[in-house]
Image 1 (cartoon, rainbow, N blue to C red):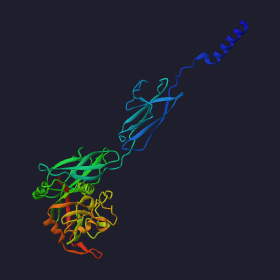
Image 2 (image 1 turned 120 degrees about the vertical axis):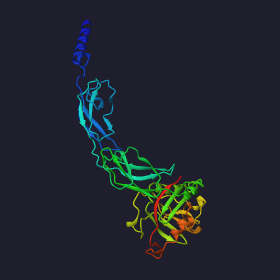
Image 3 (image 1 turned 30 degrees about the horizontal axis):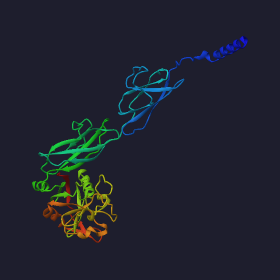
Length: 390
């Protein structure tokens, strides 16, 4: 029995020796960062992704903008091998380390920006004009860029500024004294690497006292429209026809109607405009600018409105839900349009200028428009500008 016990003890000792005596050698090998990949631009950012190897396994990564080596306990270490760079055009450096489970920290790996070459200039989509208040208008430039817009320039002349021009400010809005006459304003935007946009312009100006007074008498949104044959103010049925009214206001706020014409005039029917800068009707004369998706037809049966004299309604194709930017003003009662071919959506009415401006436009000399219809103005009336009064 003693011999058997000794034999078992000897065998157990040999087994322990073969297994290293029951303990393993400590991990003293640091990870190695071998590569940092730069991802594409997404939402104005690029992502750096580190690649590292280790004898056992990498557990965390540290990204910093300064080169002092972090302790393994530093809060910069996270499990993610990636970091989003918010300003990828900057000429800065990123320092990267990796660590393992035993808190061995790698040597630093450095990559230097810029991580994105920005050659894309901003694009301006609109200059919105506020209603006059205390003798002033506020013009607000809407612009976008592949990274970000950093400056805006607003002037009353069309000379393109340099990126260093003092006209550039960080604010997209500028208050100006309400012009006594329609005045063109030109805007540019620039980005962080001084790419400057193309010019964008629209016209803004004062509405007459008569027009402002008419606006104040209704509890509806109103728009002042200046034309080459006079001024008119329209009230929008925003509660009864919300979709159509909002659509019209988008084009007003974009300055889209500026320099468009009334291209179709039938005295005892209606005057139509909002889509062309001249006649004849053609792609060459189509107004350039943002076109929004066609809107749902708000029928007069839904709204309770009617195509009567002085009302505004949307022009469309034979497709019911096809109206975009062209509108018409009924010069007589056209109630048959409430049902004709599915109906035409009424969304507003002229509250100032019906007996003057609308009358002037409906009576301009016309000629054949290239088909059987005699509706093309010899000198098309021009919409100088349109902006919300309230």
